[in-house]
Image (cartoon, rainbow, N blue to C red; front, side, top):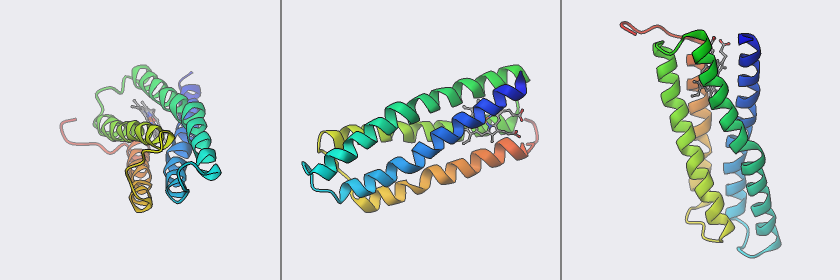
Length: 144
Ligand code: HEM
């Protein structure tokens, strides 16, 4: 059972991360499209579908399966897990900003430059590296 949960946790993570890495790329290209143009309208559809069909459900599944694993494994007091959850919270907050930016683009009210989204694009990568290192290496901290 535990190994099955872990496998589906990893499948959900791959789907979530694929979306979290691709969506800011779409924002970069969307910035270069004239508001109201056919291209801009196509980006709106792509962004909405990616968010609704992939990113949102994959985030919920990652959280649900991760918490279930922590419950099953009695790992809720492990220091690496607490640190990991902090980084996952940061990733989830970024997800919240993505939702806002998809809405801004949909209303032709984007406030940011392509350069801004290029920089934002690096954040999920950095967070993911930290989360995976914590999950796999499980470093032990004194007192935790
Ligand atoms: C708050 C949400 C999350 C919780 C509570 C959580 C919790 C857990 C737990 C308890 C395990 C099992 C550890 C083990 O028995 O080896 C696990 C495995 C794993 N998690 Fe998460 N997780 C969450 C989100 C994430 C995210 C967002 C990522 C990646 C970006 C991630 C990456 C992994 C990986 C790679 C493993 C496999 C580790 C191994 O087999 O050694 N988790 N997670």
